[in-house]
Amino acid sequence: MTERKSTEQIVTELREHVAQNPGCAMSHYHLGIALIKLHRWDDAAREFVAAIAESPELAEAYINLSGICFQKGEMEKGIELCRRVIAFRADYAVPYGNIGFAYLQLGEIDRAIEMLETAVQKDPKFVQAWSDLGSAYLRQGRVEESIARSRKAIEIAPRFAVAHNNLAVAYLQRGDTATATAHCEQALAYGYEVHPEFLKELGVVRK
Image 1 (cartoon, one colour):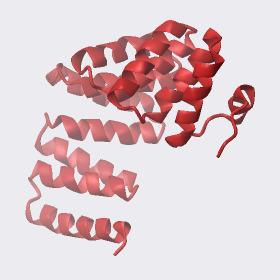
Image 2 (tube, one colour):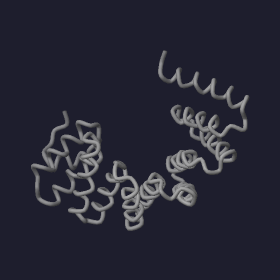
Image 3 (tube, rainbow, N blue to C red):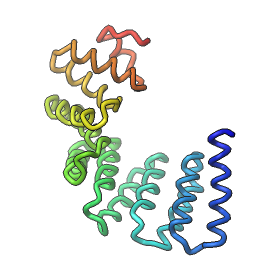
Image 4 (tube, one colour):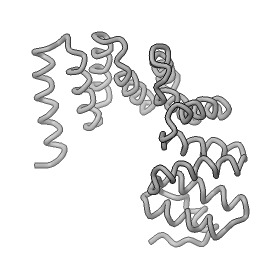
């Protein structure tokens, strides 16, 4: 049985459960999660909206709904959903990290850094936020700050490929070609699609 078929069967079972328990927020939420696995974004979004209607402070439903918005390029809508979570759960790091990611995509780097730094203060093991900080500082040309944040990311998750790529770029800008090459090779090994021109600049051959 394929994983996709298994997930589709789970969706069918969850739909039956929702039909029997239409007022259960968690039933809608779990169905939304299963639909995300099938990349059925609009169907999943409807379930998260239904979950929020039943449980207005179900933070994870807002977060997943914001993720769908980001997936569809609706950045401001996703940011607003995350801010709604912060309003009732200010200690939760994820919405800050998601807002920071969105601002990074929008090119609003100062605002991204502010939110991402808040995220890692609230959760020092938030690897995605550390990695995004590495990217944000790199885009500002603040090489040492970028290296510090990206190194923190790989301390937490040694195989985090994006952070290795950020380190490769930062170390090359610092003039340390050997260290840049080592991190570039690790980024490749862990599945990151390193830019061909960057590979050429470092003389790294894709295996």
